[in-house]
Image (cartoon, rainbow, N blue to C red; front, side, top):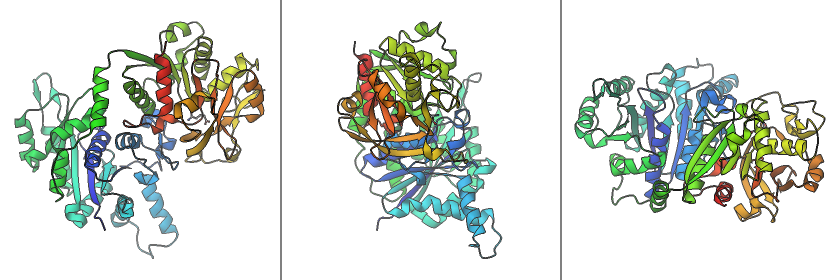
Length: 533
Ligand code: GLN
């Protein structure tokens, strides 16, 4: 029986330092050494999952194959490790409390007072170990969301403290902190790091490894100072300085021997170096690509860098494989008008119409799509983007005036997109959409088939509305084909206009399934069309 090793990644000083990237990078290095690795995220907020949070709160909502609405860091984990995550990889305080309260209502605590310690911490520990106990992994890396010192993180840090005690050498703590550069003093400052480590120590956790986030490379003497003041071995003080791409972080950490330090501290054999030829090749392509491909993402959250995270990464991956530099333009759908659409979209090589919910920005998406269709611009519509393709075609080609999705207008005379049957009577918002991976059968004679090179694909979903099959014949007769359908339900998954260069809409989200070593075929095909003259 293998002994699973547990690595915890905590963060200090400020949020947004990139704990997820550091966790994913470490996972990548261990995986490259042949270990079986998974990464999970524990988030200290009360929502049961991020599915009910809007992108202003929490960036993109990621979706796992098994239909869990998850933190976007799971996207990083999948993208780096190239293995799927699941519901078990993302736990929130809300879920921990829900489980404990359900047990309490069932009388499982036998009359005891239910408390944060030990009941909540026991439930956190149980959840931390679930994937490890399957025997499928040598390493389980757990990222603890939030910042050390937050009130809401306390039960998690206490659980880590207990697990370290219980697991001994099979447990290790990595703490990520920030070393700011103070321009006026022309100096980097280690005090915030010292305080954040102290705060962790006060809670009984001594980090084994520190990763210092910095804008510029730090001198040896700074790292030595941090080591001395924080009780951490000098060679276990790593730095993660700003690099042009998140995909360089594993290389930066490998150069400092992070994987070796981890193995050494856990009493495992340390020999050789990690080799990641495909990864390095990818980075090389990214650095040497001189020609650009210009893609416009049309959506209503374009001012938020993380709102379309998986889409951005999928485009970047596909462009890199085509040896192109991605020139990504964000176009605010609310700002597009009949008057400015040419100016806004004409110099793009390809247009992606983003997913979303609600009416805001939809009219702009429809104007963009009319322009794209009439000017034969390679276009990919994702989820709401696909639904908008259908609405635009209905209004402007089929002449169905005011055709709409019933999400936008319940009393539209032409419900070309309508609520799914199973969604009609649902009153709960959380986790109740059509979620996760479903099969899709593709017509052999389609762009989508050309892209995937097979007729049965599985992609992930997150929606309540669908193409209304009553209109299928009419659409097909006039040139928009339904080329992908769910084989069990007949639900339309992919629409295309074959006579155009590349005009494809998918009800599913191909962006959730694109990784550095396995870019999504549909994105590959979209970029290929965009760079073709
Ligand atoms: N709002 C649409 C629906 O629920 C599309 C959802 C999406 O784009 N993820 O069907």
